Length: 171
Image 1 (cartoon, rainbow, N blue to C red):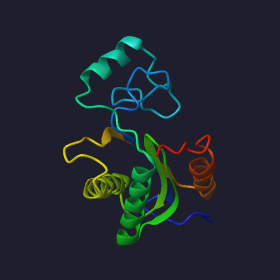
Image 2 (image 1 turned 45 degrees about the horizontal axis):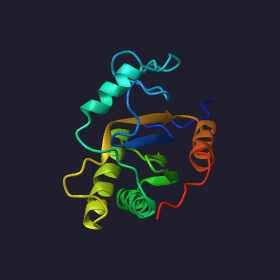
Image 3 (image 1 turned 180 degrees about the vertical axis):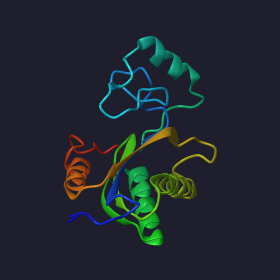
Image 4 (image 1 turned 90 degrees about the horizontal axis):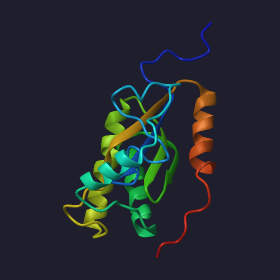
């Protein structure tokens, strides 16, 4: 007997969305790309000062770091999406340069991430916290499919307790 329900969708997704210009290819954190450095269990992209410097030069705007008011605004937007769409928000953490969310929904994760970004951007602009033409989000986003209850528990723990020290008060 199968202990997991049959479904085309996982139990939940672990979603990570980075703000613009804060995690560039070639930096010491490592990164993934569409050209082979995105396969589970394989190494991330190598650290390269030359590549990191090139990525910085290619930026058209300053990086976006969220202060306290902006983080509160982004959090409210994420919750609004989940309430409006009927998604179950299991955990969320809005950091200075990214957000993590564990979300259960019977839809594709790209739809969720796009809605999070759109609602948050609109809310930041309407609140006067971000300029009208400012790029808020980086192009890439991470969507991890969580098929087993234990994986959901691990993701929730990571989002709620694995993000390091409390965020400093910027304002």
